[in-house]
Length: 412
Image 1 (tube, rainbow, N blue to C red):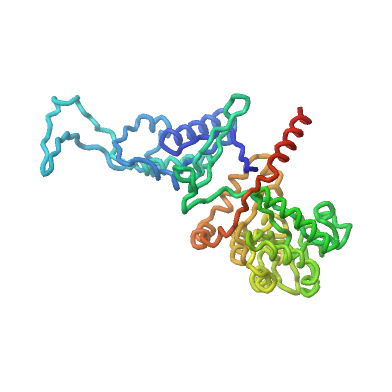
Image 2 (cartoon, rainbow, N blue to C red):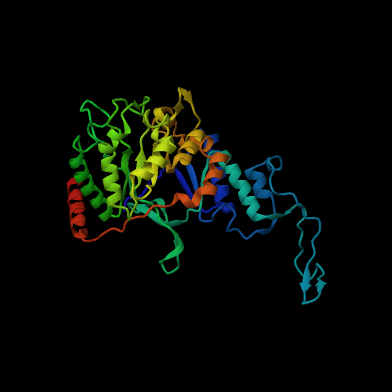
């Protein structure tokens, strides 16, 4: 099974006081020594502090060393201990025990706190230092290479103690953003030249069908792209606007046919469809990704079952402007979701500066983790998970293993 890989210099497992303090100290040292570190912290709880036994009498010595100015940073230490008292409790009353009976207890200068709240506060301090925190991601397996620990694997959510799927099971999604089923109407089109199955509709449908079936047999969900077709323009939506004045009836008889036939054939898995960033001016003034006309009205007429639409990368040039005016990342996400997209792709591959500085996480945190996007997600979350993952067929397992063995022999 192919899994998404995220690379970091340091991965800390556990969002308790120890894990958060370690992450903060590492980030502080990396800043002091001018040696940037990509640090991430995984926490199995739904939020930081969710799995912390909360009541606590807290001595501040370690915190004084870690964050000397914690009193100025709105920390949750606001109830100082004023008196120590030891009680022996009965069912209906208690007796005070003299201090000479037990070792002397002195908590003056300490604080009565919620340890869960302290962890949440430490998490905010960690994020201010650029540490990426992922709640809801339990580490299920240690990864080794040449007998050295090189990482961890996060597990599927909703697995019972017996290893069986529970009601709330959510598997990791293995999706391949292909095949490209656009009809290449012009062989000079550099964008599609080596990516499509050609310019013959029947051949495209036949070849793509084999590709789809093979992917599903391997347990991988394919994605049909780029609806309603990218072959009518010569421009590249990565770097420039794309506009077509082709009539919709012409599209229905040509470019849309592969999408309709293939999607209708596999309704049981509801093949996702990726949208194009092209304006079809005779249908709508918006690119398809932002078009309620395309993803609502027209798709209801075209497909037997409403597709699961996935946007193309909304960091591409043609998705960043409307009427020659730049639109924010938040506006792009909300436009796509409200038009009918169920998943949004946003990458930093269009910006070499961000890539070179390895600052994608900062860009996403600033531009995509906004209150309006989060609020929309929370209100519509249940509608965004209508993907049916295929089960891998093992009928060709021996062939796969033989091919892998041959590839390894060639590599050595």
